[in-house]
Length: 205
Length: 85
Figure 1 (cartoon, rainbow over the protein chains, first blue to last red):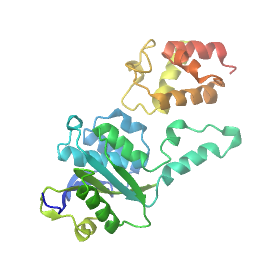
Figure 2 (figure 1 turned 180 degrees about the horizontal axis):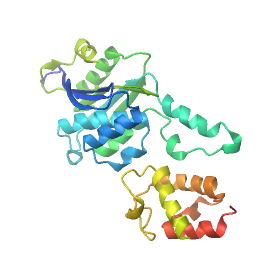
Figure 3 (figure 1 turned 135 degrees about the vertical axis):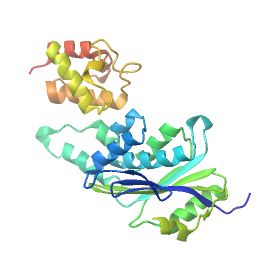
Figure 4 (figure 1 turned 135 degrees about the horizontal axis):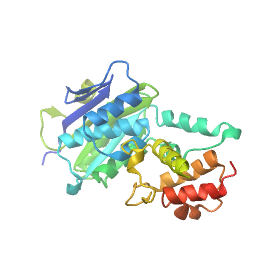
């Protein structure tokens, strides 16, 4: 098989919309809060995974983006595919860190929530995806100042070249209060119309 | 006691984010963990925090939770006997 790599499909979640391969999949009401938007999208897309409601905002965003893509690619847990996860953002888990901080800053009302605490790391979102889709694969979460297609390209191409993974689900998932963006894409060795290049990755961001 | 059971069901649904469960779907004797509501270990910790925050009960031994959190019935009975509020 060629050492070239390709983008199989891609998904965006931003501006109250979910797009798959550039086509609108779900559009939420204008000016809806992120919390309500992502819940409405979850229901509209018939996601059916009750633990979704326990997740923090970053995990909900990453989980739904990954779910849309992996369902489209007919990835089912039974196949146990070797799909690596390589995510990035610039807010890390700050959105949840702030919520946790609030719960511990008042000594007279000191009730730290275990359910919030477990999400005070950005890579937890990859764990949620791995649990749902039974992925026992490589995963890495990088914090960059800005979207970094050069790094993501080199890292995911390297994983495929070294046969560390059969496919790589890659991209950017960022949440900070009402600002959110998810851009995930699936990289494979299987030839498609979209070569896995820095330009193609960047063009779709 | 019935009011307390109803209150507990509402609190559990709200605090553990059980969005797809309604109060009338939780029977007083249903196991809260495992095959019942399917709560997990993080939920158990949240329930311990809830006992402290809402009912003034501090569990000195988290292992006690296993019996206390068996069902709504066991929770309500424990709170009735031990809450200073």
